[in-house]
Image (cartoon, rainbow, N blue to C red; front, side, top):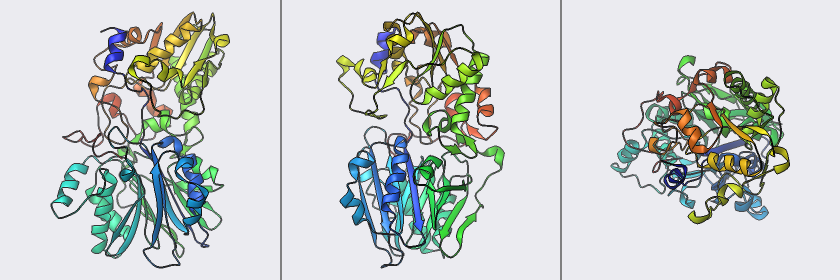
Length: 483
């Protein structure tokens, strides 16, 4: 199969998608929180660009009254000043979402607001449940009517049902966690409590912050920096935290696993998280620098310039340069008005889908041997086009280095790694992939380097190794019950 045939088979956009960011705040002084959630979601926009929403409640007002607004688009497109000013309340949750094809609808936007016999729940969720279909069917056979196709609603239903038989919302969350399996970082707003929960494996990040007399829960520490909050700590894998004015932050660690069973998504460090985020005590920026250093140690090549594919390839390229002594430079200009998703041109002008996002600085690469660092190769189409663009700009040689191992298996935990037959590295050697993308040489980060990259933290490598920390579902959940 030649390169043009590969393009015909894998014509979708190359980059991976991670499916959302969550943010919650409880201001014990009674101040309105909607504008703070708005800016927190701005900081988490990279985690999802298709829809977003905010739900707030006044803990001093009528119990169970929730005001919310959500819609399709970016945070600044969905929220105008008049909409934010109408969201009066001192406790609230926010969400920004990415979905896989076919599920990008307003109905699936979050937070979800559920009215039930005990009051109301507002819920924001990041992750994927591997047992969502069976849990959904179980609920449907007992009369549940679903308004969405997302597994977040399955979680909300289970929490609401358990709440009827328990003395507190946090106990209901704990009982729901006994049933749900997979990746989830949750923020739950009840009329008088803000609750955060993280799955026992710790696939997705969740942290606690504080600003004045308000507590914050957020997917990434960069959101705390944006609103001027102080980082308190990470929510531990398997932990439930309950935030109230009377008791501050209370913790339930009954679902926590031994440290050697934790399985953070390694791609939070490689690509998803912003570089200024710290995830479970490890700097994302430093992890990427280390990955570049490891590539230089393990896969050296003579060259004149090291460049990164923006944005997530830049830190790894700097690491490669620091280790190798080869100068680091800028070869690409990125269009700042194009996000991780955009309306792609028709098939006849597929080349434009990359050129709209990136342009090559001819003066930087002309006549040089270039090492190009990117975070991953999924289908291979984008890598092929960027290599071609560098050559057209006059690069004498193009050597590609990748700051992750080859993708060989799909992901079921909130990353849209496609099926095996869509992965360019599946059933191909590195040399064959190199030929398909048109590079002079190609090397990936060695799988055994991942542990060093994240300073020994437990992490998931299933998309590289096929060794899933949880048994994968018997049916493909990624298109129908995704977050």
